[in-house]
Image (cartoon, rainbow, N blue to C red; front, top):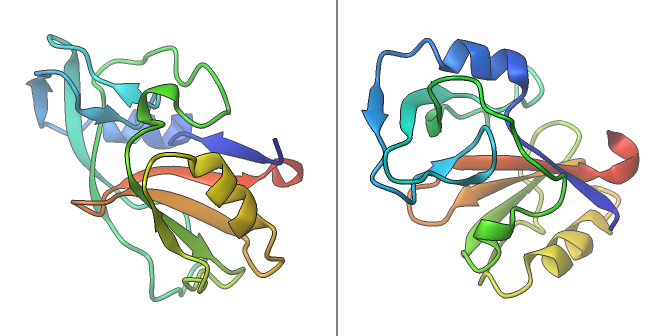
Length: 148
């Protein structure tokens, strides 16, 4: 694999967990702290998050994300989240300026890893954000393995 998946950084999670919007999960809410779906009964927080992009980019966005309300073990892998493998997503590629790159695409959920590999093969792609196809919410960041 030539890429790495990144959940929301721990320092950002600490801030997000101070948001007042705590709820009891019904199950299926996508958790950006551990990159899996919430289980029924999990205590989770819905907060606004702005994923990292270069200063001055016109594409900086803030949107809602779910995280565990208390610290969790985090993502168990730097691979594509297993529970989300068959879920269609937008793979929004960015160049080094933080502008959306033309290889941005929607994948159908059948083989996101191949789509990511193809996107990162373009030298103009600096990183990729996976986003929810229906709501547009940030899911996680993808970088080349050597860019860790």
